[in-house]
Amino acid sequence: MQLSPSVTIQQTDTGLEYLAIESALCSATIFLQGAQLASFTPKDQAPLIWMSEDEDYQQGKGLRGGIPICWPWFGVSQHEGWPIHGVARTSLWRAEEVNEHDDHIEVSLSLPMRSVDKTYWPHSTELKVVFHLSTTLKVTLTNTNVGDSTIELTQALHTYFPTSDITATQVDGLQGSQFIEFAEGPFEQNEVVSFARETDMVYTQAAPMQHIRTPEGTIAVGREHSTSCVLWNPWIDKAKRLSNFQDEEYKTMLCLEAGNVMEDKVVLEPGQSHSLSTIIYWL
Ligand SMILES: O=P(O)(O)OC[C@H]1O[C@@H](O)[C@H](O)[C@@H](O)[C@@H]1O
Image (cartoon, rainbow, N blue to C red; front, side):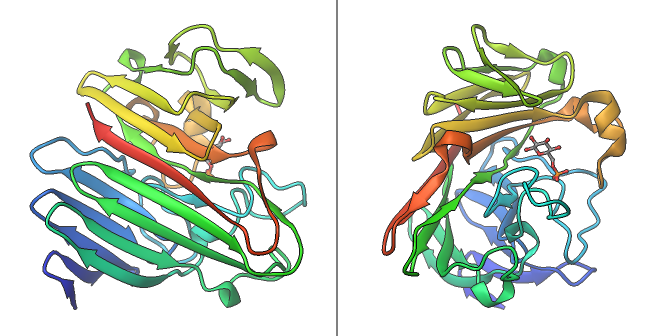
């Protein structure tokens, strides 16, 4: 099915539907499950997004790569047995709109709340994501409180980035912020970050822009309405325990995740909205 000149709807062999974008400015894929962007490549440039070679695109399982949407909680829930990173990434979203312009394409999806188990999220909330696709990628996740009581949530746009060599990769722009590592801290980030071990840091009061320096070039990663972000690489041991992840793939990826976590959680009074954005491009 053709939705606009550059956007078609397609299906994997396993039956997962996705929007395929092939425009003069970029190519991209966005799955209805999880509203998960799985690839994004600006025209004549290298891919900006990483996906595991082992991903097998199963229903009800978050994809190992792309941009999983973590909602309405980030990380491990305080309720035992609840799924890590919430329920949005495994739920079926609805494609709402595709608007094609000369200089960008906008694709929006929403999460039908009837498909979210009320045990996990009993509140009346509208959740929408808009992908703004050109030679840059902007993703905006908007929560609106349509109920009559205050809601609180944590969330993240959990972007996987590619590199040809994690040991030759650095993240610049986190200096000056505080981080929590494996539930300890806060510690002060004094230097550019390099990778030589498992990295799982939650940064607070982080500057709105970081630069990932890889052997292939520098990726700019911006955030709006977010003062927290997460930096993750599983390294050798955890790589072996991860689903849909090859043992050696920790060498070729890292996650830098735009967040609203910890003290940066989203608090919405009835009628209020909040939009979290991430902006990604090759410098
Ligand atoms: O394997 P999952 O559920 O996709 O999570 C991947 C990682 O996501 C990161 O955001 C967390 O900080 C890590 O602790 C976690 O391992």
